[in-house]
Amino acid sequence: MKNKQRGFTLLELMVTISIVGIIAAIAFWNSSDMLEKNRAENFLLELKRNLNFARAKATSTDEIVVVCPAQYNQVKKGKATFGCKNKWDKNKIIVVFVDSDNDGDYDSDTDTLLRVMEKMPDNNKLSFTGGKRLAFDTSGRITTSVGKFTYCPDQDNKNNKALEITQSGTTLYNGDTNTTCN
Image (cartoon, rainbow, N blue to C red; front, side):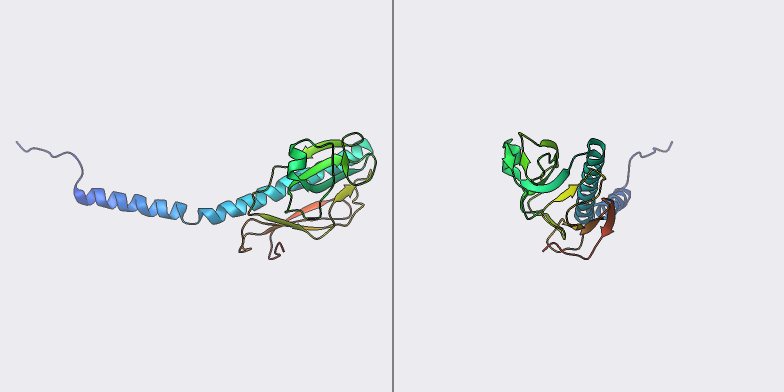
């Protein structure tokens, strides 16, 4: 009677491990690049949702709604007043508020804070070709300068994404762009 051997030979085991290693290398090959692209796209789509919300809120409440960059520490600590800053990436946070007194700055006595976006990672940049704030009037139109947002998730500018806002208040996600965040 013949004895049957059970198990794997060394050659079969080595081939299997090699195949698994090749598949793992392909799966993890360029994941950091893909994560940067996803982070940029997700941020701009979240910004687009907030811009659309601000426009809808302005038309439904017949009030001026402002979207602007603010100082992170002032918003986080719940300061009663804060102003819109000039740089969209330097302050790392974007706020949406009803500007009842129409001065362009937030004052808790007269204005209503509607939304605060999550803080941007420190190594990411955001530029806007318009001004330091976007204000939506009661018809949903922009009363300030319009422009293009560019989000740069890395220093080499190869995964930059763009979002454009028109005078009518419509936001258009452009996706990949060669524009840099200077």
